[in-house]
Length: 536
Ligand code: ZN
Image 1 (cartoon, helix red, strand yellow):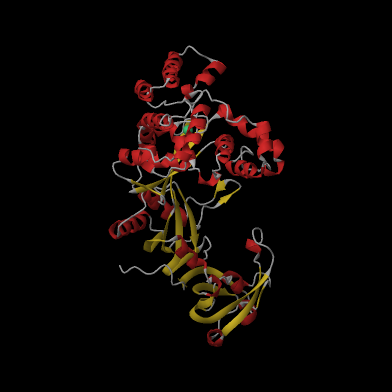
Image 2 (cartoon, protein in one colour):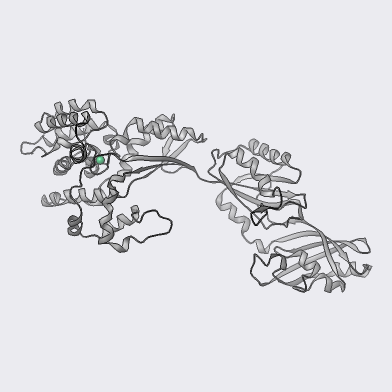
């Protein structure tokens, strides 16, 4: 039995006459019993007709004739029999004629069984065949998942139609001293999900369709024939419809809802039929889009090669180096997670000719639309080995899945961190023992660094201060030594050594009072304690 009350009777009568489907009528009766929506709509219609004929004084709806079932036409006979009303016998007759295809154009619209409010969403699209379609689209993508969330996109004009139907019953309800608050009407999307979620879940073999899940299955409906329903709103409420760059139409659902909140009833009724005109066709299912939320992974990388950029190096559309750190790491990762794309970030970056040694540089990757989102500890270890075996130019460690929030920790306080380097330095003047001692005694030296010439094309001109915490020189031959430095993150080491035409002050040339140049540079450590180390 439908959970309807006496007060619902006028609503049911009015909406049946207007051409609403059985499930939309339940929505307008504010029924929250989900099972009522899940039962076959023919059953519901039968019960609704019985419900309104159940009172001596009740009138038969003027044109229940056009009440739709649509889902399974063979049930119509039983509907009319059960209802035992002339009106519903007429329904059967007309329905058969429509099926025979003898009407066209407006005639067909008048006889249509498509609901005036939901345009078939709660009729045809609540059938198992549609659930199968959705499930097949999901299966084809081969995601590994155990829950999904269904997101439904409906044409904006459904809001206009719903508003019109609400006005249609509101007066009647008010005349009887009752209220029908628009907010109490069960949203179409909700009713649709109540029916369809279970069907889709069943097709997917027990996968739970829930309200929050990493896998979002988007179902989009359109109904071109009634797109014009919204247009009058633009002239009545022009300020609700401002053109935006990335939207195809100004008639977004949000804008339409906003306009409907503003428009006075009288003005709406002047511009739009109440109840809405009968549509001659159903909505169409535009497509099923699956999207999995991003997975984030992190680790540390070493770079052993002096001709490998961190990211693809492209100048004027032409590649300069055949590979990059991020590509070498990304290829095996993308195939493991079967992801569509990635965003790479790291704690600072090294130049193409600089090696990164020691424990390596922390990095993180966002994997976009991964079809597999969980890897076991063992699988993760295997993935790391695959990366390491694929190239001797790089090596990764501590590879792990992290949260999106954890990723921001890598960038936090980056500037305050310490980095250690070793530079191979050349000097014009032969190096003295005193020079070596002098360098080792310098502590907490503050540098003023003007944006280096080599990066001026992509960074604004500025002077920034960085601190060299300590240095140590190791003699190689009279013109070469290894300079070990501990500095604040972000210090331009090359510029400190050669001076960058005086743009870095003080610099090593000034300190040693001779020309110096940097021949090689290695990052020895990046002191960021993230991501956590994973014991080998
Ligand atoms: Zn409907």
